[in-house]
Image (tube, rainbow, N blue to C red):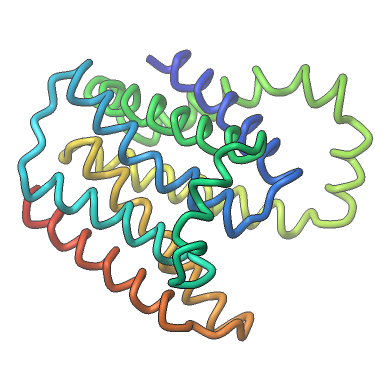
Length: 227
């Protein structure tokens, strides 16, 4: 389980990196995070036999729909089609596949934490992920990696710590909840991103961001009641 989870993590990092390299964050992130609950539910139901209630499915649908609304450019007909049109681009395809990779390691993690304590499990998965990524980074990205570290080492350390804490929390959630519910609630990170953009970066919320955040919040409530 640990090896399979680490392999999915490696695929996820490479795909998401490719998506961010040539794509816009406002499109790549919602495609990746918005597709994850859908893929996870399909995998969990078909492979590990999870049963998702009607209320749970409604909550998942609301979260995905809220993420979609949150990143619409406008409410005109062309604006509604734009996220789907973007899927023809290579970067968007990478983002979509990264969502599948997250669904893969999340499902494996659900099975793994049933046998290994979450902190130990996280340590082993992260250690193996780093080991698998190291040859590629050292051989192909060494100069870029060193330059990035010299310029942004504080941000890198903060991001790494935040990533570890977030992953550990998800592992604890997986010990008592369905993986399809856990990944849906995790998608609520987009709401916090909207809040930070509005009040920290002064981007402004806008009607669609407020609506998207409210839809996601309603979905989380449904998932909580179903769980």
